[in-house]
Length: 181
Image (cartoon, rainbow, N blue to C red; front, side, top):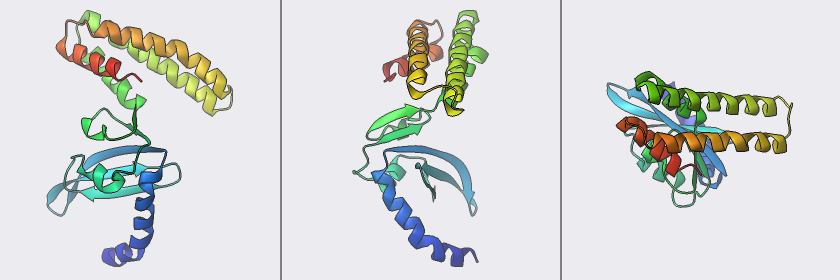
């Protein structure tokens, strides 16, 4: 049955996969799974109107080349894994960043913990503004006005974190600050 369903859906699947390189923005992630008795990765490519899933043997960026080729120049929304640093622009997932900031809180000394708490509060503030926008309580222009101070606050905190006594905090903050655009 699985083979029959796969064969029936293959033309539609391939048509959607062929549209991936033309998308303005894609959210991309992969997660471990199993295929038969071996390890595999389930790759997910989420466009505005559709999603494509693919089981691949590896986590390597070769999957991006297979699905996006040279034609993709849009925005990739993802976690901070280097394999996603493909073409176009990156937008790191704020849910993942929030987890990174929580890790600073959980693993840091007193100063690092305080830095992580302030970064997490700024992230919560960002999500509150986004919720207001999504609910229609504020306009896009108001959202952008509210995000300016949050962005500047996060940038100041990240810059401060690049001077942390903790090597891992320093590294995280440096990477985020250097790629803040």
